[in-house]
Length: 139
View 1 (cartoon, rainbow, N blue to C red):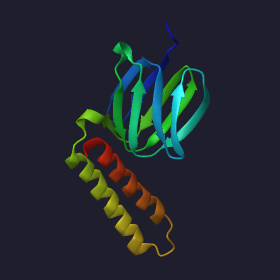
View 2 (cartoon, rainbow, N blue to C red; view 1 turned 135 degrees about the horizontal axis):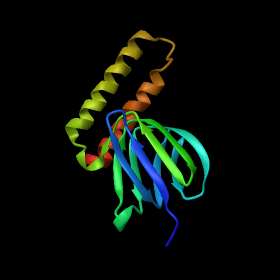
View 3 (cartoon, rainbow, N blue to C red; view 1 turned 60 degrees about the vertical axis):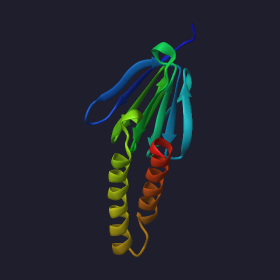
View 4 (cartoon, rainbow, N blue to C red; view 1 turned 120 degrees about the horizontal axis):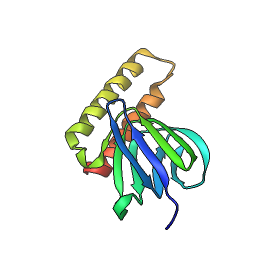
């Protein structure tokens, strides 16, 4: 039997997952990565995306939508502290539209107020990331 690592996914509202897994695909802010047993320790920020878990009990893959946060990979364990998270199966077009509209409003406010572009590019990227996730999850 192959070695497993402990995976925990926590949002401010609840713990969404706690299980032994083979691998976790993480939407990192600086690029996607897959953490497996004996991965080098790291802490990374997350962008909006789909976090996928492989090799959980029963061999099923689990997927979760996250809006951002942090991932702590430490040898035999990985902990994801998400700003907001939910099972991908619960994501609807209306849910994604709510996130996108909120991000667009923040972008518009920054664009109108901040002529120096500080934060405007990050706000535009957030809108683009959320639109991409919507296309992946709900078409």
